[in-house]
Length: 284
Ligand SMILES: Cc1cc2nc3c(=O)[nH]c(=O)nc-3n(C[C@H](O)[C@H](O)[C@H](O)COP(=O)(O)OP(=O)(O)OC[C@H]3O[C@@H](n4cnc5c(N)ncnc54)[C@H](O)[C@@H]3O)c2cc1C
Image 1 (tube, rainbow, N blue to C red):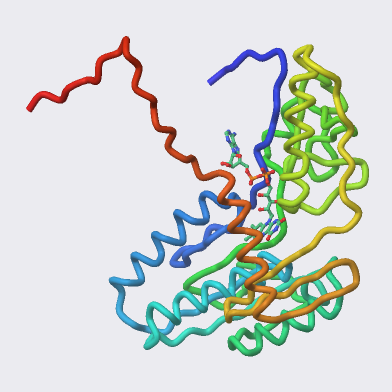
Image 2 (image 1 turned 45 degrees about the vertical axis):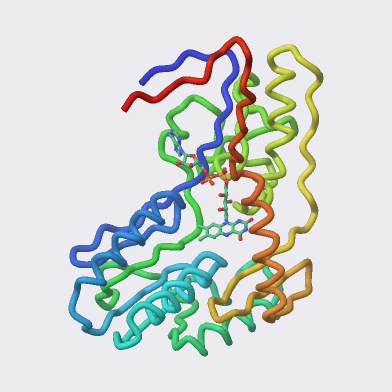
């Protein structure tokens, strides 16, 4: 499909390119929409399958790898308590949760140990010689969509669209890009908190590009709150150098996430009856 534009806004996120493995359910953690469909399909298949032991490998020791392997184990244990599960998390980093404080990494390590996850740090996952797995959770960071490199837009070394402070492409000022698909000179972590905060600035700047109002510069917040669910009723909070784990953190996370999602629930608007338009009748 070819679409013409005067002003373009790219918000296509990031992706992952996991290995295709015969006999293994490979679940890439990005794009998130595809993950949900693949996970529900796997659960439906497991519900019909014999209760033989299941080997799960998670690749990636960042927040997504830790959260997903813990969530998958908790869900499977709740649905099929009689099924034996073996889980391993492989990461080429020397520590868990790079970029977060060490106390957060220690809490994550304790949660993984309590859930029975074997941890292999400083290890490069190689599909050719890795032990066979029934489920492979691919959480090895984020990758730019391949087409971005061929788009003619200026991209960084990793293929993300380089943008200026007004969220415009460095090479094409009538193209805006935000969130995971975009990069500053000093790249931001691929986190939703940045994508979400860019939204209102993007909205204003798109209007400005169409001649309404003035553009605004986006200033990323210097530090962000990270809340990681450990699927045991607890969550880990990290803010700057501080990290805490507890049930209250999980309740806090649920409240923040719930309030955010609530903003996108469409409420039905009652249509007031008008005198000129008679109420339609349904024929039976
Ligand atoms: C498991 C996991 C947990 C995470 N938890 C957190 C968290 O707790 N806090 C946090 O801040 N961040 C978290 N993140 C990161 C966060 O999800 C991303 O940074 C955020 O979603 C990026 O938003 P985005 O709008 O740029 O991209 P996305 O949310 O990926 O949205 C991109 C959209 O574009 C669509 N799209 C892609 N290509 C095309 C195309 N060619 N045509 C049309 N549509 C297209 C996709 O279908 C998708 O709907 C998590 C990520 C993962 C994987």
